[in-house]
Image (cartoon, rainbow, N blue to C red):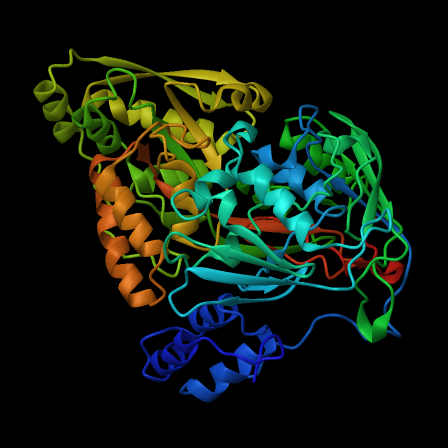
Length: 563
């Protein structure tokens, strides 16, 4: 039934039964079926057959070929970092947005949360989820004319799994995959032989630092000399100023009616600094057509301006308050718990994010994640906090310096609100403010800080990035708090191999409880996000991770509201 594979994984049929019985949502069925190698179109048919109410696949938003106009340029307000080199070490989304137009991923998770093959033609998983066969598209060529082959994939896995690369990707595969078990079957096939069952392999292939590079990669992605497979080539890159990508002739994918992609001539990324007000002003003045990371105060300023289209998304984006558990007094869980208790969560959400989100409970799994187990939201409890500090033998008030970036007004408001309410609980908060660039220079080193974390489609995908250790017992690269808990890790590995979402949710209930009760983070709220743009740009889309998936973006001058 699948147009990707002649074999349908047996778990797909079990999931279809659960869908019919009302034990699995349609969205989770589609996610599960496509994850296991069923094409998106076939998954929609299976959902219609298994669901109580058949539903057709969504209608494509791409305009008919006759309506698509070629040419034009989009101008994007976004940071253009000066200190990037190896994509596997990307630590934020904005640089990947610039380079994902030039280089591509093996898979791609759309705005609907469904992961589809991109540079892969298909994938197949063994019944026990320990062997994954990746089949490459045979018609992809690098921009230098070389064919895309299996050895190219192995080269990238070697980079990702090399501890010396210091890539966050390592955390996604820790305990499951070593480079010796990435095997070339033939020029168009790679097999991953895992040490245990793992359900999120396709989604891990779209972790934003996992751009596929040519084996001749010179170590610096900004040079413009590295071959790519994407629809654009890098024309210019000036850190702190701008990046320009231009249409590539001979791109391997076509659009509607086999029209060559991409449709635009170029994309220009403009760095206007760390103050988001500059981006809003440039948008209103018609100097840019869209911007990255529209924050809540900017959304409120623009939402009634009829010149723009604004598309919302519910997400797992979050501001994580974290404490380094290898430094005093945060080695003591009583102190960590006391600090969490002085979060007045509804007040924080209202003052920091104008109520535009959902309350959190100090576990890094969000209500939008399919395996999320509903949690009771902890109450503001200053008396309980003081009692715990007394039990820990801590003299009050306990002075806490918190690293925060003034580039994120919601983070500042979060800490200012908490500073006010923490006094009654025995804490004296001092905000160590700095620009965004300075924060990213020390985000893994500060004793206490508030770090923005972006959306990921699964809870079992985000947790290994920040809350486990590598095979030698060292915290993985993005474990900024250094917190490692054996019970938590064992349960997480079990959840990573549990396909049944109900069973995974049951495991996640304990994972979330452990992290909430003895973990290293505070999460007061989960964020809604928005994409704002000039309505002349068709197929601009929105994405919960604010990714720019723009192969089919095109410009309609008749709808340009910013001329």
